[in-house]
Structure formats: structure tokens, C-alpha cells
Length: 239
Image (cartoon, rainbow, N blue to C red; front, side, top):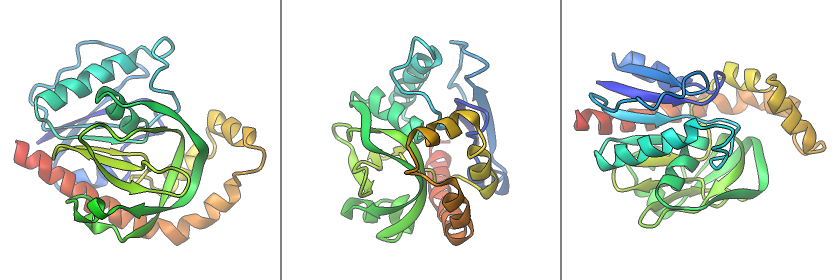
């Protein structure tokens, strides 16, 4: 079984998802779009598609031409009934591909935030492992409208649309369930990220984010494994 992974920037990678795949002897292939904007990316012999996060906006196609390539790949994967999972920017790209509006959220979420599952989220195969309230990691300024025909799975006080399922195999997660402690610490050193935090005029404290890692990361990593295992099962059934 093989999964194709679209990566926007080097520091936003699979994280705990990679560990879950290795433990199940699954194969994955990164397509590093920041280095390769080839239009010849194939979905042949692919059992699942994952789209990771990044700092760009879905409509910055002039600056990042590969966003148009991703749009076509997502649409093609959905047409071919291939399971699709998008995280953060990936979820926004899926929403856009399904015809929904992606826009600036009322406030940026950076750090640890409370996530609440909806009633439908509690019934969902991936989200059934989450309690009604969970603390997750966030790093985003944009949000999406829930696509027409999709199921709303989770929300937060600052961002109503945190997750959705389209059909039975397509998932968009605005929050980061895949992060490791090392990833969070690395993200907090990326110059572009530091500039973003600085622009928020002390609303976000990197030291508080770091201090909260030991408190929340264990539960988040457990959920990551459970949620991703369910997604892998979708891919396995598709094999």
C-alpha cells in the first residue's frame, strides 16, 4: 500500500503520521512542491493522498504555481475515489477544490487550543477516538466554509470550521494532529513564523507554547495514531 504526500515547505512534514505508517509497513512518497512544480505527478497505483500544511494562502497561485497542481490532483483523487486527507493548508485546498470559500479567520490560532467535536464528529470513524473536548495544536490564519454536502466534524471558539468529511473518504483537518515536540520547537524558530508571531503584538507567547508541550503532546500523539490508523484502513480497503 502506497500513499502520496504533498509537502509545501520542508518543516511541515508527516510527523507522527510517518511513524504510524512505518509501524504498519506502509510506503509513502513525498512530493516536495517547493522544489518541484512538475505537472506530471501521477496518482497511478496510489492508495491514498495526503496534503500537508504551509504558510501560503490557497489563492496565491501567482507566487506558488504548484497550488494549481494540487487543486487538480485533489479533484482527480476524489473522482477516482481515492482517500484524501488534508491538514491545515491541505484542508483549505480540499475545501477550495470542492467549491468552498477560503478566507481570513477572525483571529489567528497559534499554539494550543480547545477543540470541540460536533454531534456528527462523535459518530465519525476517524473522530470517534476524540473526546467531546480535546486540546490540539494550531497554526493558521485562514479558514474555510464547509463544502456543500460535507459533514462538519469539529470546531473551536475562535474558528468554527475545524474539520469536515466529504463522502466517506475525504477529510479536511484545520488543526495539526501530526506534530511532534521537535516539530513544534522547529516551527518556533522558522524566521517567517517568528515574523508572523511578532506581528501579532504579544498576543502569542512562544514560551507558553513550549511550556505546554509536555502537558498536551502525549494525548495528541495518541489521538494522531488512532485517527491516522482509521485513515489507513480507508486506504487499505481502497487497495
